[in-house]
Amino acid sequence: MPSRKGWLAVAARGKGVILVDPGARRALVDQKRSLLPSGVRSVQGQFGIGDPVDIAVEPARPFARGLAGYAADEVRRIAGLKTGEIERALGYKYL
Image (cartoon, rainbow, N blue to C red; front, side, top):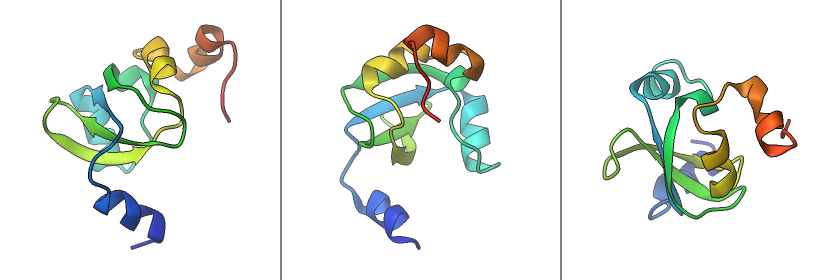
């Protein structure tokens, strides 16, 4: 297991939770795709860019953990949007 994935696997918990729809879960788990804002339903907690976050369909049952590409407040603003709408919503877009 690569060191980054190993570190994520043993981290006690994420600094926040990103709640996603079942379609986003399938894309992440079955298809090994990235999380898109259109699949995000809501955000719990506060986290910054690069912080570990839990990903869940149900709040108390995370199925994945990853590193946040956006801060919690930014994810709240882009939740449910299409990828092409990120720049309009935030004023910028990470590459």
